[in-house]
Structures are given as structure tokens and as C-alpha cells.
Amino acid sequence: MSRKALERIAAALERMSPPASAAPDFSGAEAFVWHVGPDRLAPVARVNRIDIGLLLGIDRARDTLLANTRQFSRGLPANNALLWGARGMGKSSLVKAVHAAVAAEGGGLKLVEIQREDLPSVGRLLALLRGAPERFVLFCDDLSFSHDDEHYKSLKAVLDGGIEGRPENVVFYATSNRRHLMPRDMIENERSSAITPSEAVEEKVSLSDRFGLWLGFHPCSQDDYLAMIRGYCAAFAIDIDDDALRAEAIEWQATRGARSGRVAWQFVTDLAGRRGVEMG
Image (cartoon, rainbow, N blue to C red; front, side, top):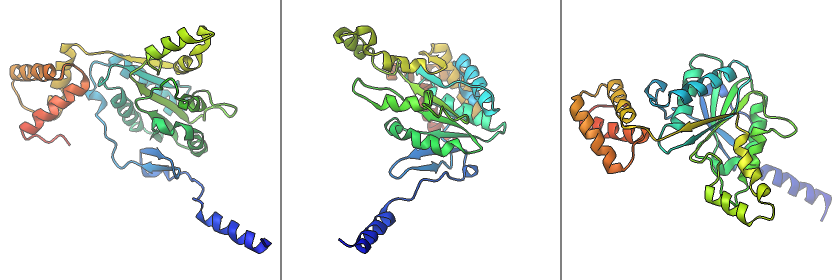
């Protein structure tokens, strides 16, 4: 094949390849979602979140994460955070609410969401964020790993940073139902069957140790559940007698078999719909 033919083929392949990723105009939105194939940061026009004042029963976690995020926004040292525990108790809602509260104070804080399955691309994402003047909360919701899952190795690029180190303008927040990010039965199974049990799952279990903050979320009491509902009703001006509200709320949680912030929100959504009250 001639040299000119090879040059034409090379030029054609270059035209077919996707353009190099470029950082977006971060001033255009307060939150972004990371996509791959091709790599891009998609702006979020309106973040789905609840005001931080409506998140009840998680005061310690709220105050700790709020203080950490404020430190980070001001350019001070701050920790990566793992929010773990009971389902529906406001872990992801708290991350989004804290971001909104701190962003409203100024400083150009942005929220960037990355899906667990896209963690292998996190190095490319960090390269885009590293040189930006803004500061970023990198957020991964519902993070966990199975025994044959290698994605956790990619996460170390965020938590440890490798040779380059984690970008000074990025902090990582994750939520998980598991404290150690993998099922306990898998931990015990690998320990019992390994040649060196003490080292069998050390790499995966120690991953959670790399988060400077561990914030636990536990099932709420009935009093907390009812306080959440009363708070929502007051915020959205839903007028209902307290005895009737209590009876309906308890019946609702009984049909769900659980009490949580999510169940409280679902009840109030149903109540508002039945009473013709808009919650937007």
C-alpha cells in the first residue's frame, strides 16, 4: 500500500474518532452528571433535592457533613465522606441538600455525580476537573461491590490519588447501605476459604477506611417519623388535624413494613395529592 493511501486512511480514522473531551462551562449549572462513551459532563438544569431544613432525625450527620463541605468550599482541608446505613434515611438527600446550602453561600461549589459502573473512567474525569477554578463534590450514590467486582480499584484514584494525588479542588462523597462496601457473608466466606484469611479481603474492606468521615444512618423511631411528616406538612401548607395525620401516617408505615424518611416523604406526597396541594 502506498504512503498516500496510508495517509488517507489515517486522516479518515482521525475524523471518525470522537473529539477530545473538554471541560464544560461550569458557570452554566450548579450540578453535572458524568457520562462515558463519549466522555462528557452533562449539566443538570434542576437538581432533584429537598431543603436541608426538612431533613429531620439526622442532625449529627447533617452538621458534620455541612461543616466538612464548608471547609472544602473555603479551600481548607476536608475529608472524603462515606454515608452508610439504613435505606431511605436520607443519605443521598443529605449530600444534595448540603451542596445546595453551601453553594448558596458562594464560592463556586459544584456537584458532579458519577455512576458506580463508570468508576473505571474516574481518572479521565479527575483530569477534567483538576485545572478548573471551581471546587467539586464528586458524588457516587448507592456504592457497593461484589466479590468479583474490580471497580473498587478505580475508586482508589479518588481516595488515594496515586502519583498525582487527589485534585485539591475535588472531594468525594459516597452513599452505601454497607459500612464496608461489600456484603458481610462475602467477607466471611473469603476469610474462611483463603490461604491467608487475614489478608483475603483486606484490600476491599480497607477501602472504606480511606474515607475520613463515616456517617451512620439508622432506622428512625416513630417520633422521628411523625416529626418528619409534620415538618413536610408545615413546609407545603398541608392543613390536616394532628390526630388524623398521626393515624394515617402510622397506618401508611404499617402497610410499608418500615419507617424511614423515604416512607414519610411518600406518605406526604400521597396526602398532598389527595388534598390537591402542589409540592413543586
